[in-house]
Image 1 (tube, rainbow, N blue to C red):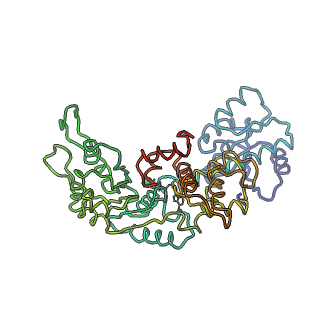
Image 2: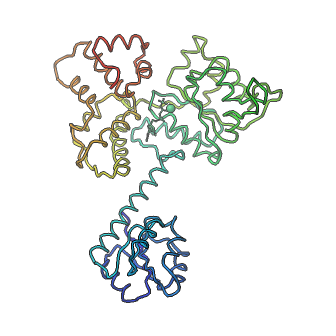
Image 3: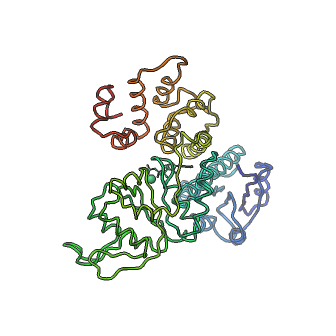
Length: 451
Ligand SMILES: Nc1ncnc2c1ncn2[C@@H]1O[C@H](COP(=O)(O)OP(=O)(O)OP(=O)(O)O)[C@@H](O)[C@H]1O
Ligand SMILES: [Mg+2]
């Protein structure tokens, strides 16, 4: 909460202004006063108020004119206090974004309750907006949550390379924050005012990927009735983020190499190359070197990509980050869901710290969302945890006793399924098995396909 709220009282009667100040007599409120439309407008030009108490019948005009003028900036921050209280006027005021309408003569309790309700709501909205801005596209290095040394090193490296034009290869398991780091690098660099364009190299047919990336000229193929600017073109002067680079089709790999070496692209059927100024950041959750040996991923491209390599460790290897991340997402959910969860039970902390987080930070974020969607009390307790945590907990708990291998396997499959929200393709990928093998195992352990 803010320490001081500034309230502007617009009313022509001095006695009324004094009365309102008396009713709202709070140390955290500071008051400004105006008795006419003109005086109010002058004050409103000078500074922003947290709340306005607005009378309608003023000597030089109507309070409604003020409200209309400031309706966008002061949405939900104006309370109309008027003797002229017809339903029509109240409706018009609300339509113009007033928070509430209070009729004179004043009811002391109604005034103070409405004022504090309005201030509280606006404070929450402001907090939410600040957090949303932080989390939106413009995420910056300073807003990455971590406490571990290993993540500290990652952030340090990201900071160092933000101001260079070097190509960056970010590696790490799914959900570790590769895209977050890529965005942070871009928005901390001199390119931050220019676009950050993402392209996912997997699951897109080679022909389509090529035109998506490099664009095409008019008439390049049947139906190409106008030229198309690809992702590289859009990213000129900015950054392109090539996600899942390990899946980049072998036919496109040399073309990417050309961009990296000369900054040149050839749109499809174009006779002329275009020279661009682009920073490339690539990410993968696979080992590209291994791929290189299988001739899937060109070695020269692999070496060219890794001018800087940032390896994000899995969450289970940076346990000090777990609880700060949980607290962060709890706070975020408190704001978005208007809840007030303030405590985490010790036992829950232990379970969360022991849990292996196969889906990393993304899984943690979803788990907190799951908890926050059901919780109604201020403390997170064991019973609020999604069942997969308990299953896992039981599996590792009994000291001195040992699990059967197949129980362990079943638990682990359940755990990864939970982390991927039952996405079988991702689950199989994380487990390092083919989908048919996963189906067989799920059948064997009687795990249902849809949660
Ligand atoms: N250190 C962190 N602090 C705050 N939020 C984080 C952090 N790491 C990850 N996140 C959040 O977790 C989610 C997953 O992160 P991100 O999308 O960057 O992962 P990724 O490595 O690109 O995953 P994938 O390989 O599956 O694409 C995002 O919502 C991201 O904002
Ligand atoms: Mg990603």
